[in-house]
Length: 444
Ligand code: PA5
Image (cartoon, rainbow, N blue to C red; front, side):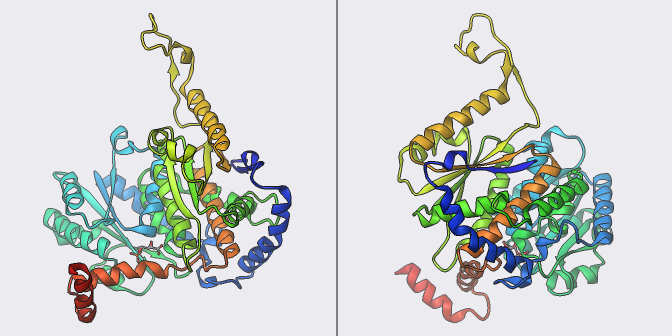
């Protein structure tokens, strides 16, 4: 079993009867998902994605990835939110945070996820003297951060190789039929890939949105999909022992007991972007109608030296969920040193993964003693197959968790507010009335 939820460290906080009491609501949520009758039911395409996907497009993704790996030194992936996080999360979980530095061949950089001119200039610098391709990813085709970066990078590419060759090096992942990006791609003859209508951004990593950059990183996308398919089979069973449902129930029970924050913690830095992906998944799915657990994350032991004090001893608003990776991608044997000048010979003659594990176990026990409920998601490894299963585990838990909270887990109306203000303040035509009102607020 590659992914499993353990409630061992929840025993002092949740009684077994509490799971019994909430389970009927899980049954309703399960049924709503299975028969597509719940809120947001037009965005359930993710449920069958691991088994029901466009095989012809999947083959084209592999071909495009092979071509990019062959004819480019650098791939720039422009996208934000759901059109960014999943791809980067999987690439770094499977290949590591230093994949660009330690592997020969194609380097992959993510951009279009910020309006920082410094970031954009640095991205421009990494293309200097390099053969590069662009994968622009935007379902709407109009997202400011992505579109702004893309207009600059497209020009850079055209200036570097000429418009005709540039058209062969721009890959657009967008809506099947609508939007500015789709129209532009068709007009220019760029290879295009589809964000399915019924799949929202945060559920899109197993579509071309994630699969093309992931395949470009040299990751076996068949394995990723196979793992997700295993997850789909496991987490579609209506049972109290369904690990995704157990995790969803745990979150909801603790929420009802007054916890307002979940901290996803992992002792593996390669999980950093998976943490970010989790935050978008749960934050956008549950944070609405003035409800929801606020998703936060830590990488330990790094953050034990920053957030550790608060988690041990601060306001008891949170519970923690640890992602315990059973087998690390690499290990390191710690040798004894003569003289023991640093006093660390007590750690010698064993693998560093053991030291990291003991740090995790010690932290769990300490935080538990400090009054923090702790659930543990056990994962065999961060290989493509296990990450695929983990993705499906989180998706299913998130969907059920959202229904338990009585929100629509598949929309995100709140993200529009900042955009409206930004457009008004920048003087976008049509926003004149709001501009004056906002400036009045800003300037007092
Ligand atoms: O989850 C979401 O819907 C968002 O995070 C979007 O993915 C994000 O805003 C990017 O949108 P688009 O793909 O339309 O550029």
